[in-house]
Amino acid sequence: PEGRDSEEWKEIKRGTMLDLVDEIKERLEKRKLIIMLDEIHTLTATAASHYYELMQDPRIVFLTGGTSKYLNKKFEKAELKRFLWDLKQVEMPALSREESEELIRELYKKYKIPKTISTERVKRWILQNAGGNPLGIERAVEDLSRESDLNGFDIRKHGAVQDVGVNLFPVFVILLMVVVAWRFLARGAGDIDLYALTGFFGIIFYALSRFLMYRYR
Image 1 (spheres, helix red, strand yellow):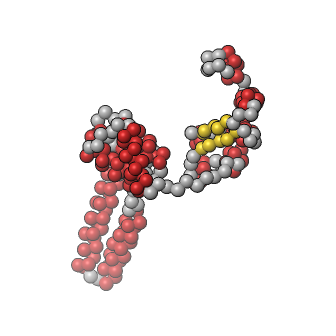
Image 2: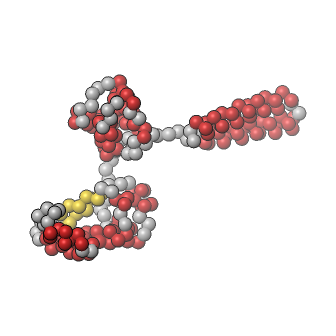
Image 3: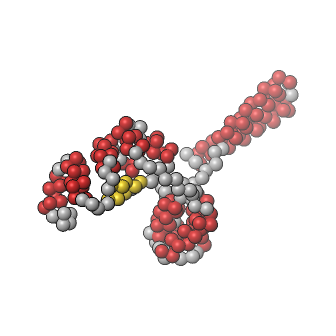
């Protein structure tokens, strides 16, 4: 159709998804069509069934991106799994640190980001947390380019690249077990000094745990 405002296109939009599928296949003739599913996490079972119909046509190619672990967990319904299983998986290894640095340099040039202490700090943060994911790197730099105040920009709030946190829970569990074991040992041995010392460490441990819970809640 000649543009989105044409009567022909409006008529197509009033039809069903099945009508649209037939319209696409009819208009292709000998041409090839590449369909990019950018927001695949929003895919519904109904849409997947129609996309699956298009996938059976050799003239049509679907492209999307995501980790196998995420997609397998996301698509549990039969219609979605059938669509997913028909996609050919192409493994894309993560960028090396050198490749990531080169990509960031090129993106800094593209978005005209000045070289300052703040932007260099953001660069190091992206290298540490992006895991060699080129899409995550580009989105983080793109977000940076939109900021008027680069000094106040908090890259950690960006959704495409997340902080690689350290899980301290096992350490706290072990420390708690040690303190409790010491107290029982001191009580059984009748050692008042050791019993008092473990009580002191218990108070410190409790105060520290409360502080961390308040700080990172």
